[in-house]
Length: 94
Length: 224
Image (cartoon, rainbow over all chains, first blue to last red):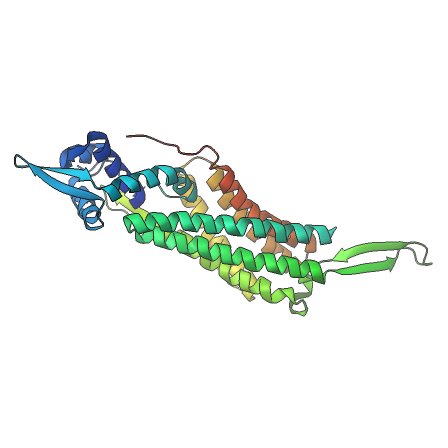
């Protein structure tokens, strides 16, 4: 639980979450958590934020909750892929 | 000689200002998508940097127009003449372009402050809570010196922060060049050394060109 602390940028975390969901098509929170290297409480906060800004949506299938990318989420992932290098150059941590 | 250098500085600033604006545009576009306060501050920082570069460019151009030709007898008996150009800024407020340099001196640290605030706001500590801190206080003897001193403090923090995280890449080099340019200008204004002012002014826009050079590789990093 108390692993090595690491600073990451908000944009980098969003990128990892969107990337994790995109690679699966739809993904449960635990899968995203490992792919995005985030503790569960932080992931919950982020997913809530991403739902509020319309990048991901929650779907329930046989009592299991999955997350999928919205159209805006896919566009954002593309935009982040393009801008990742620029943001790293500017000092944001991915 | 100074004449050409001053014109080159104005041109470099003119080249760097749209680059800073382009970076601001890209960052604002991302902010619009993911609604991140850190990106908003970073975008504001690069917008302000663009404004500062415009002021600096205008100042450089005005200095170019103001530069006085010095024609002095080379020998006591008056045989032969020595020609040269004098940079107007060591004369301080007697120079028309001084106002513009002062505006730029005010906007540069503001821009860097926004950039630093953006980087720190964007930063999230994952897992353990931590401690961050460290503010450098520098006294100022004038608006320009104060602006440079403040810029040096902020840029030192940005560079230090970035070096902790990544190797020496083009972005880090860009911030370092910006830092060096402000140190040189501070020294130049204190000592009244015209060529040092010219060198410092020429270095600053080059820093953005260094960042741009680092983007040549296109998209990088880990994929899923």
